[in-house]
Structures are given as structure tokens and as C-alpha cells.
Image (cartoon, rainbow, N blue to C red; front, side, top):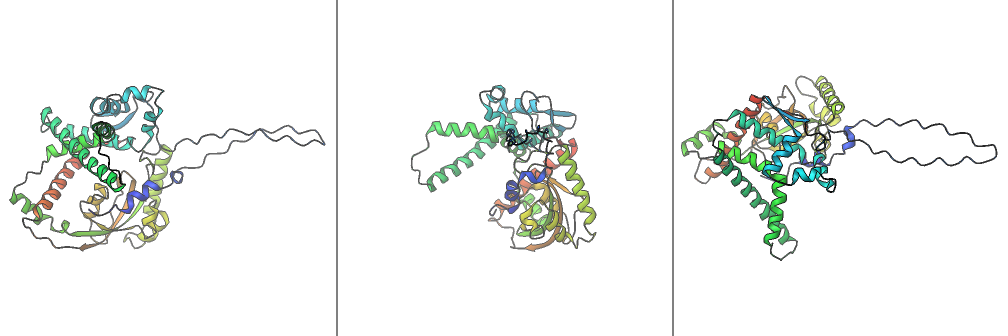
Length: 378
């Protein structure tokens, strides 16, 4: 895939204060009048009051029983999340969270790590509930998850080494440093690798040539095709951390969505104008919300957004907002362009296999989320 798409980087840089209401100013107590002829004493400086976050902040262990997701009949709590990470990816995590000597670990729960952790844990639970029979062999599941972690860490390590080389650092990486990098990587990315390993076990990609040919024929436009879209983003998550806004913020986002939908004409003829006025993605909003060159399985954008976009016809608007890790998107498909024509040849088979495997894994996770009525609460 090509370089990063404007959407995620714009959202990550967006000023968080734009999603909050200003706090009311407290009324100062009336100072007594100074005696006549004497200057009034300067008022004592009041200590600045820190502004409370406008998104949900959880602390451990105080909030260990607070729900973070609902998946089928199971409610996942913050304690479940911490227990899972401690048991499988970073053993000292729970102890460090409970210690007052290491506040940096408590800060992780209000950083850009926690929302993906919750999402990955909820997806894992949804897959386990939905495909329990296929995932009953725990040894195979563990092996697939371990292989996924090893592969993802190797990609990270290769990138890390290449960056060192570009900066002129010639000293080789010591085994101790590699071990440190692995420990940190697994803490931060272990859940994502665990989820990917589960998907790879469910859909390993061992397709026959005939199956690849059939998939290619059924999805020919996805190979070499690109779509131009326009979207209007309304954030219901914090731009910097991805954490769900507090109740006031979510209510405000829902009201904004309703207002924008009411302003849009049924034929979408004023979509670009509304995007310029109301979209929280200010960068694309300047261009009427337009994003060019979106592939069907585009690594630069959320899968749910690409999926919804490619289900539309040119000029068509989605009837309902699409939810992603950035917020709610109202989308319009502008046009399809065939950028390249690909034939089913031996040279094309690796690409077709990759796309087919990704498509099948996407189907699995979308189905599991729907079956379990998955809801994220953080």
C-alpha cells in the first residue's frame, strides 16, 4: 500500500479541546473594601484548577469492576483487561498499576494504548464465542498466536534496525536490547498479535488455485480499482487517545449527527458543502470531505469504512453513519476508477491470495461482532 492516508494523521493531531464544552468560571468571593486613602491590596493568586478530561478515564484498581465492553452474554471489565495482559503479555503489569512508585503505568490507561486494547480483547472474545468449535484446540490457538507475535515483532525489529542504519548508528543490537524491545513490544502490541493469530488460524489462506480463480472473478473490481469518497466525521472519541468521550460528549456527537443528517439533501448534492462546514476531519473537510484512491482492502483506513464505501454505487450516500475508532462517518461514494487491469496469472497469485485471506478474515470478525452484538464502553 502507499503512504499513510490523511485521515488518521489528521485525527490524531486534532485539538482535544474542540470536543469539549468550556468549564464554567467560579464566582470570586467579594473582597472587603480597603480603608479610604489606602490602595486596595492585590488579590491573592488562586491556584490554577486542572481541567478534567472530556473522555472516560479509568484507574486501576479503583475501577477494576467497571465494564469496558459487552460481548454476547459476557461483560468485560477493566479488571479482565488487566488480568489478560498480565497473564499473557506483561506479567508485572497489574503489580505496577497498583504501585504508587510507577505512575507512568497508570497513565497508560488514559493514553492511546487502552482503546485498542479494549477493542482487541472484545474481538477475541467475540471470535471465541462465535467460533468455539473451530478454536477448541487450545494448543493450535496458542501456536498460531505465538507465530503471529513472532512475525509482527520481526517486522518491527527490521524497521527499527533500518531506522538505526539511516541515522548512522553502526553498533549492532545486543541481545539484551532485543529482549527489552520484545518485552515492550509484547506489552503494547501483544493483544493485536493475539487477535491476528486467531484470525490466521480461522482463515490460514491455504486456498486452491480454483478457489483463488473464483474469488478473483467475483471481486475483479477490487484488483486495480480505487474509489473516491467524501465523508463527514463526527468524533465520539478523543482525537488524541481514541478513548470514548464522556456521556456529555457522546450525547453531543449524536445530536450533531442528527443535525447534519437533517441538513443533507436526499440526493447528496450539498454533501461537500456540509462537510466543509461540519466535519471534524478538518483537512479533508477543506476539500468537501474528499478522500481519493481508496482501495477495497486499504491498510490506511478502517476496514468498516472501506467495506461500507465499496458496497455503495457511484453518487450514493450510506443510509446510516459508519462507526470507526475515530467516530461516526457519514459517507458518499463519488466515483470508481480502474487504475490497473490485472490478469489471473502465476505472478498475480500471491497478491490474490493475500487479498482473499484478508477478505475472509474480515468476514469472520464482522460476523462475530454482529452475532455477539459487541459494544465497546471505553
